[in-house]
Image 1: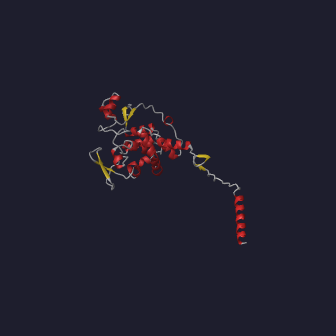
Image 2: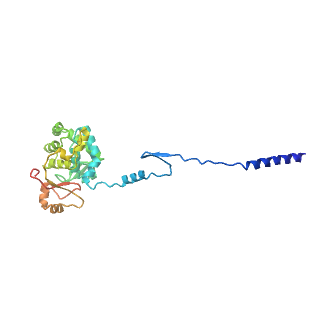
Image 3: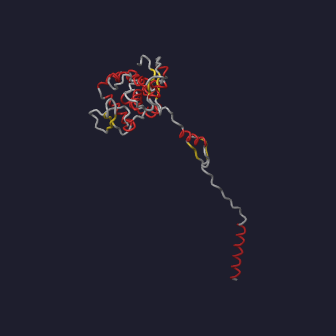
Length: 283
């Protein structure tokens, strides 16, 4: 009797198993979540690549900078100059032009080794680091800064804290010509052509636009800001240039070239602007 009961149970189990084997097994594949990118509003699966976005990134990375050293300098320091204008009321155009001229567009020894972009000398009040460099005299003392930004700030303080420059701050904030002339008269530079050099840089590279931005004025083009008939011919120093080579190119002598630009030596800086054919007004 016991054996029959066990056999009966086994047969029931076999029947249930055979019925279950006929049932279909259904599996579902979990769908991938979709993602969106900030550069493209289209919905994409994670394994898809938005080519436009990648191409833009590559283009931005390999985009070459201008070969014009002065233009590169302006691009690098325009924001700093405008910030200083907001704080200290010195035209950004003047600050940039002085930086270009004094630092050789950032390639001069003082700017490279001392972050000194304005040729500011030590004077008696200076207690910071210093560097010695030939200027009006041999091995004169110049200020050394941690970064160019400190040089720009010291330039602002240098002008605002000295009474001899007080008259400049009575001029209109976008009167770059008045500022250029005033700096020379106040004794900032010994070069008699210093104002013309600043004005030339400002107008060639349209640096006055940064004054307009700070003041909230419409940005004008050069033709709209001046009626000048200046025919002065200038040369921007490039790598490999020499005084002899430049003089020969423009059919003048080295002595004339040095006189036109008040040069005391044959040293040149990349990006330096040289007058090679002055008008009677300039010279």
